[in-house]
Amino acid sequence: MIDQLERGLQNDVKKILATTYLRHRERRMYRVISRVLDVIISLIAIVVFFPVMVIVASIVFFSNGNPVIFKQDRLGRYGRKFQIMKFRTMRTDAEIILQEDEDLYQLYVNNDYKLPPDQDPRLVKFGAFLRRSSLDELPQLFSVLKGDMSIVGPRPIVPVELERYEGHEQDFLSVKPGITGLWQVTGRSEIEYPQRKYLDLLYIENQSVFSDLKILFKTIYVVIRKSGAH
Image (cartoon, rainbow, N blue to C red; front, side, top):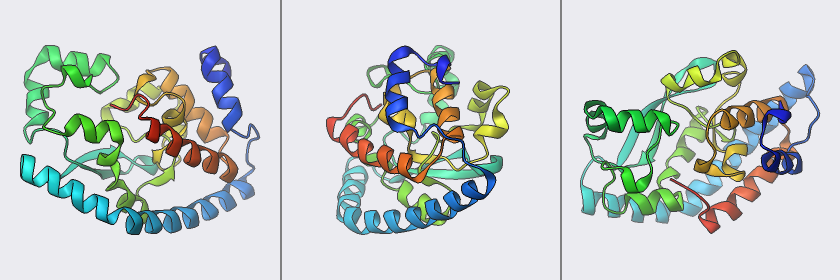
C-alpha cells in the first residue's frame, strides 16, 4: 500500500507509522488503551479549551446568528452514521446553495468534497479564519467523549465519499474516524484522492499507541503553523 503513495508522502509516513501489523489480541488491547486515552484527552481538552469555545460560539452567534453549531451526517465505525459537530462557518442554506448550483457542486466533488475558500460562496464572516485555525473543529471533542469518534483516526467522510474507497470499504469502516490523523499531519486538505485513501488505509493497517501519540503531537505543530487547512 505504501508504494501507492507519492515519494514525498512515503517518507513522511515511514517516520510516523510503526509498520508492524497488530495481531488480534494486540489490536483488541490497542482499542482498549485508545479508548481510555480518548476519554482522558478529550476531557482535559474540553476543560482547557472551554473558554475558547465560549468565545468562538459568541463570535459566530453575534456575527452570523443561530445555529452556532453545524451538524452533518458522517460515517462512523461499521458504517453507522453520526452527526459531526463543528462551529458553523457557512450560511444556513449552504447545502441548498451547493445542490442548486451544478457547476459549484461539480467543483465540490472534483475537489474531493470541499471547496477552496476563495471560491466558496457559503462561507460566512470569520468562517475562513475558523477553518484555517481549526477552531471550528473543537466541538468534535464531545463526539470523542461520546464514542462516535477518536482523537486519532481516518478522516470522517460523508456517506457519498465511501465510493472513493472502492474495494476497501469494510477496512475503512472497521475503525472510528478521528479529529486528526495521518492525513492531517502529511498535508491536511492539500492531499487529494486516491492519495488520501491510501493514507487512511495505511493508518488502519499499522495502528499503534506510539504512532497515535506521534500524530497527535505533530498535529499540534501543524495547526500552529496553520498548514493548508481549508
